[in-house]
Image (cartoon, rainbow, N blue to C red; front, side, top):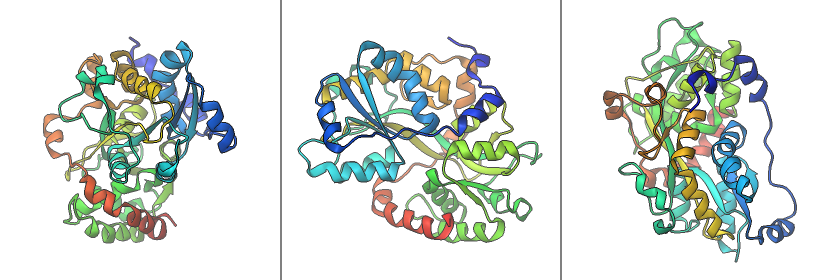
Length: 355
């Protein structure tokens, strides 16, 4: 097992690599389908950037590709990839074999008939999933929760509430991430007297935030980490795992748990209903839950593993886990409510906040 020092990137190396672009699955639809007929090829849909890179390091390269599986990667944002799976429901065969999504994204795809019901007899490692994490259409790989993150060189007293982002003293220094916009709706709904089943009060509070501090909106985690390291951004909200990862990388970023409670999230994998290579897709799901892969992805990302046999080092577990009191305060997504409203939330965000 590598040590904590081995896991931590240097500040210089981290900032050099954060801006790296992603590779999108290329070629015509016809040639892609023809190539994927081969039983040894698997098409993986995922976010790009360091997320896909870490999935490659923890699972895809050392376990699957090393054994001869040819992996093609279709990398894009979640809304783009969801639209693709929904469009392929009517096709005899789709273009994706496994896809990475959040728990809420997976629910939305499932109720619209885009996902394969899972046969857990083909995923024996799922026997070690933590209580409450077995799902009929989605296999979680890791989990965390949204909390506050800040630059301790710029903000000496740790923030304690999502309300701290509205502080006029931070005007021009507040950052938001387009990639996780829905978490801000939840966070500010909680702050404004709403709930996980009623984000409407949060919309007005986010408009107050925009007026008070003119937040900078970044496309991804990598970009906001660079902005916080340079001093362009002092404070934001992000996953606890990201704060732990960046702290370990010796970036000037720390996490702080909000008094309103964090927003829980799971990341995992689904099999599209029209997947061409379901045999390899099940192998992917099973291998990702093996102790070595679960331990590796947590070591790389600082997200907590979804299985009980990852055997993480105590110091790492301390960094990525919530205390008992914090776990009791975590707020969980109402999947049905989110699925019903997500399209209009995204439209509102793009029109009112992102611009």
